[in-house]
Length: 234
Image (tube, rainbow, N blue to C red; front, top):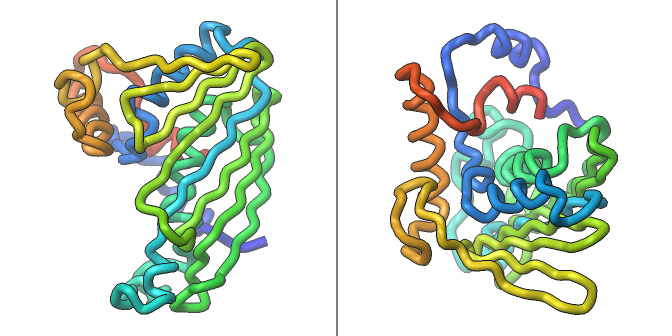
């Protein structure tokens, strides 16, 4: 069971009262926000599970000599003791727990295949029992050959399943029985407030987090966004 973080450091961070945003951008995208609305409205029935994956190929590319080495990330004094686990897995876990509830038990399996340095995990399998009774299961990797930036998440309910993928950021697939339909984004409320399909990508999440953070700092009405206080539990 790896010691992932310094618990004394977490305790000190809990004393911080200054509003602090955390840029876990997928949670603030239209897709994940809409999945949350569907779950809360009961459109999917009782939530069974949140599943999905976050796959990249950076470690696979370096293992084949296609790209240069990782530089500072090969030094644990600079990068910490982990790679994919605390770099991109937390993004998927944040979205999953936002949809399904806080984790009460977590099991993590790490692989170091194709790693440049012994401390750099490249493939993560993550399972969480959630306080709502649902479960979450994610596959997170930097060594899946042929991948760009594949982030997808499934909300599986008793009455329907809803799926969102970052590669089709303005569309949700809703399945009921053997049938499926696409729900296209029409809202311009989030982020840059541009029309759908403008291809801002994950920058949209950054813009939305910063916007809500500034509203809070200014004492104005704001909507929940990823913050330091709720991420310390994660």
